[in-house]
Length: 169
Image (cartoon, rainbow, N blue to C red; front, side, top):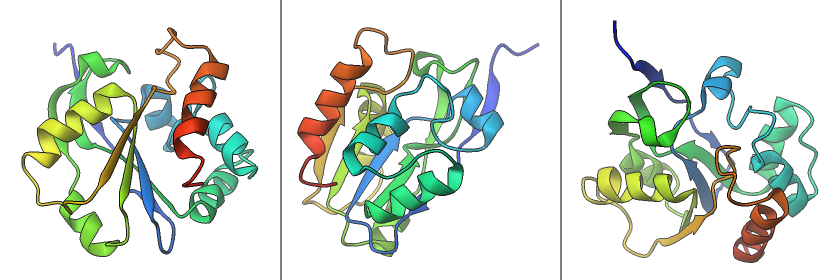
């Protein structure tokens, strides 16, 4: 019996003319079950985005509209992996999404925001070193909004995100 499970990520949610993107690692078990990004009720992502944009986040439709109004792409670094549970530290055999395709589709994207250190590490290891990307990208690493990142309180996470993203949103 295997101690890991195959996890397949989601398609990106894209605004019509996005200028920036937020990348996580891989959806959590709860998100995979709900088939939508950041679905865990204690994940701070949607409350933080609500605070930054003043857009409602009460339904999936609201969240998709927020992404579109913010000129954002919401995606994950990984297309698929093996993982038991939801912890990024348990990711095995990671396979990155096709960012070359994404940047061909949306060449105006110039800022990549990582939802946590692990997303940035995986992007460095499995995307930057293996895919051809625009050279002038701004890469911003922010604290993970995951409830597993218990070292920071919600208010602190929100403040970090607000300080770094004030010009983008």
